[in-house]
Amino acid sequence: MIIGPSVGSSVNLVHQFQRQRSIEGATHRLASGSKANRIERDTGAFHFTARMDGQIRVDQAAAANLNNAITYVQTQSDGLRSVDRVLFRMDQLAMKASDPTLNSRDRIRYHTEFSSLQTHLEYMLVEKFNDEPLYDPQAALYADAYPVSGVSDGGWEMQEQEVDIGALSGGIRLWWNPTWQTDRLKIYQGASMLFDSGEYRAQHWLNYPVYPDHPDPTYQGESELKGSSDRFLIEFAPGSVNVTEAPDNVGVSLHDKDGLSDFRAATSEEEFNFYFSNDTLRKRLTQYQTAEDYPKSQAPSGDSTKIRFVVNEDAGGFPNIRAPGSSTVWDYQAEIIKSTLPSKSVLANADGSFMEIQNIGFSNLSELSLKTLDGALTAMDVISLEQENLRYQQGVIGAEISTFRSQIDMLERKTMVEVGAVARIADTNFAEETTNLAKNLLMRDTSAAITTQARVNATNVINLLL
Image (cartoon, rainbow, N blue to C red; front, side):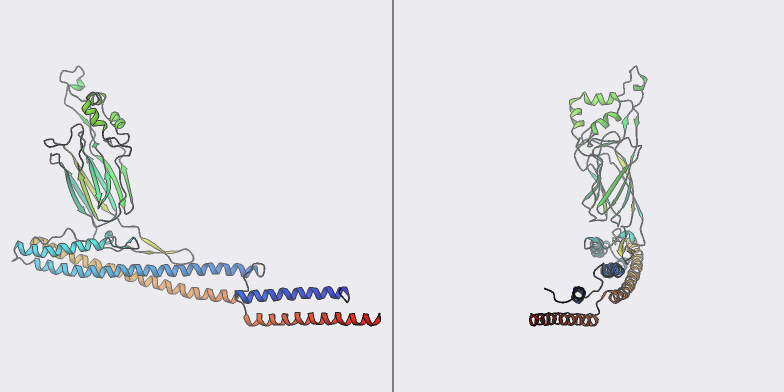
């Protein structure tokens, strides 16, 4: 039972509820440390601080990324210093080998050590940092295109050649002509097979076979062939490869899943029937077909800068099998164009902007030799150029580190200002909140005591009256 005027009691209850909400709010703000952690308390402050918190987190992530980028380029710089020491020793050996009084045995002794240093450079060139290549040989100042050609010696055995392009990525423009007798060309980068033509035929008979007394004059003259070298563009980089065929290619790969039908469409009816009417040739023609597309390719792993061209690595041949005593005629031309690896980007700011990490590289100098006087003199000139390249690359790295550090300093100052702005808006004023909490607690307790005493007094008065 409530003693006293009903209106006064209601007002007292409202005041009690208001004080209780104030006590709960102050307690929550003191516990969380934030006075803008609820949208209904201050919509503007809540949205502003939420946005600023997001910017602060992105800026802190950008600063961490830039520090990682500095570690990456410093690792590159350390590697280049090791390369510089190797080049210094190679230059000493080249100078010693340039002595015109040396005999071939002395030169070979110098070349042996020189060759081991070349191998060391090859290993350093493919070093990685967290599975990312540290160096791109194409980034060296002295890069070129490499022409390659191969011609059959008339024999049936495998023939191969290798060229070190000093790069992990690039493009190969290929002209491949195995004529009408099939041959097979494979192109490797290290252990990865960039291109496999399968048993390939680039030319077809227009009037096969030739019969001197045939009533149709088409078959009385000399045999004629259609087609020439088929053209391909092979673009490769670590983890990717793309092969594009020229639209006017007429060649057929017998290994292709549609090899037999393609062969039938490319040859004359007389030639195809000639092969299919012979059990041996028919079996030989159909044995190569697979369930895959040919020519086929395989993405390289980026483990080597060496490109290897291999013809007739596997047994095969059509219509004649490659075997001792047989012969085959083929030729190919290729031009290898080196290309740089894609540059890396690092987040630089909360606005989404990025900064690039420049590609750094050097040459492994695999083409140099000290076995002759001319070779030693050439090596001295090339090594001097490569040492100049290293100085240039170190300058690029130094500029990058300076740029990254300046950006980190800017982000740290920006983050400090942002944190201060958020603190002024959102952080709890502990002195003020503690005072308000104590005041409301005191008023709540006092009000409760007064109300209780008033009820007791009113009850005593009524009892006396009764």
